[in-house]
Length: 238
Image: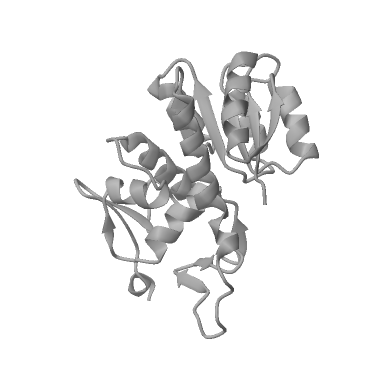
């Protein structure tokens, strides 16, 4: 099955360059040069992944991402010419899954897109669980469902991006284990860790906002100072 990628950038040369590389990999490409056209394409087509530039006319990348996250979970890679931490933190905080600064090597972008598609849609390639196999992990009021790839809190679904789900899954399946930022990054992003603490910190913060009753005093995702993070154990709620 050919995956679809939406390229959104107001510079036609960048879109065309990425299109050439991605089509060689067998990906089907949609393109847009402003956020309004991109939003229309997302609503009218099945898009598996979007690459979105931050600075665009009509509807910029940040506002487009914010709008998308009210309805869609598809993975998003943000592009920015500024290469500033503030752009990255803002984009990740709104639900972006990855961030690439311009200028970039197109081969790196292709590799990041392929890795994102693999880790997002690999769920569909797994065989169905045997009847006796545990398909849920329940800790406190949270239930992680491996079959439907959803998380429920107090019986209500918590809307997560694909990356947030993978990050939560890694921790909930090993409650009580201390994960370093490096371990989480390499396990969830399937990439080499480059001392990029912001990416992990922002995603952990977003998970806490969605899962914790009081994100400032988390009971599920706990910070172990100087080491990393760990998820609460079932015994903590008995």
